[in-house]
Length: 195
Image (tube, rainbow, N blue to C red; front, side, top):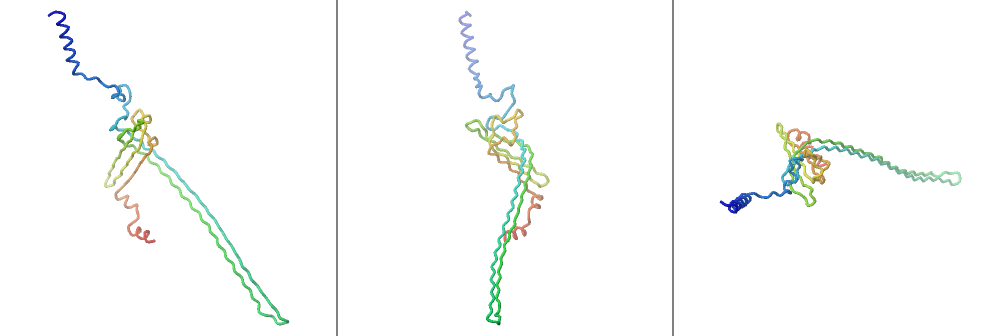
């Protein structure tokens, strides 16, 4: 076999073998580097939400008002040495009001929940949604979280603090015997509804 034939066969073999290989788009693996941390950046990826919420609020108000009024009328008369009956009239009114009220509320929540990236907004921010149900001896506790996170807020361990979620909805709900015992009974509810 001459040199031309061997070169031709080599080129055909390279073309046939190369035909089965597909080029890889580097943009697909942009967030999947072997040398960087794995962070959520696509729809369906999971991200850990660290819920650390503390709230405190207080309100204090006082009001006071008073009003007083008095009317007085008196009269006496005398004809010669004979006195006539004396008349007198007094009227007084008073109104005083004092009121005060105070309210104070404090809350602290700490939890960790995994959420899923539902969609990616045009600016690259991600809409996340996640829930967790914990059931112990008939007591159910549900934690739900949703909102928008920025890719820059995702930490190296693929977690985001709840304070970095915009339009955040964090819901804690419970149901069971303890929840029922904490609420008023049906008779109390009826009296509150009537009065």
